[in-house]
Image (cartoon, each protein chain N blue to C red):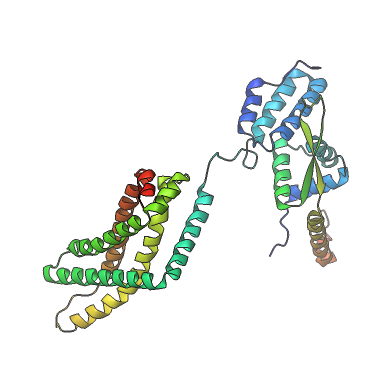
Length: 112
Length: 245
């Protein structure tokens, strides 16, 4: 029984949208993830994730300004919705529950 | 225009062709911005290659535009509402639909009985005749209804209903009618046959196939006759039916 559907990459994208707060649009999200997590993100993967998140109602978007380097195309700024916030909190609390449930011995792994 | 360097035209066109129209301008903007940046960073060749990679990696479900005029989702809803309307029609004219259904059920029962009888006598399938008798009844009913509703068909046609629409409209009532009749007819004929076969010491089994064959035959014939009537009524010039009072 999953209350919120959120994949790993989607979670990363949502958190990054939160980090960027008012400046979250395609290119900036991509760069932020690339620099912070040092993993490469393709435009395709990012855009599908954003679309899925918007369809689920976790993100909302508004049109931004059209600048010259974008050849007159507008930006699409994203923002986390209340439902998205709940989803993130749910993810976090389940993870923390799991972490706290691990007995200490299990993580006492000695590297030989 | 500040920069005269543009990304590879072919791939840009390809992207514009497949991209979902709602997302197109935003993603194109992102691509342009990235291209511009990469151009300043590492030269045209690398920027071109990266642009092409991006375009190819964007080619995935969710971003590809949905197929134009695909309708099957809608079609189901339409059939559902058609059947709902047909059902309500049956309920509204309770008396008539009861008579119709009873008559049809009797017809199909008789058809099944005759079919089984002939099968018993000749030991090979020959219930086409019986179904032909039964279909005469359906044919008459269909033409009667179509006749009754010529005005409605005319008005609908004038308002822009297609032949398919009209055909569906007329067939839905009949389909419901025949389906219900089959459900009524099957146990009745089964009962009578059982009674009748009791008399014989050596008797054939009543196969399920008889009922299935009779039901599907009745459905098929209904569809064909109703289609014939409906299309005849629908193709006719609506002025004819509307002018005469």
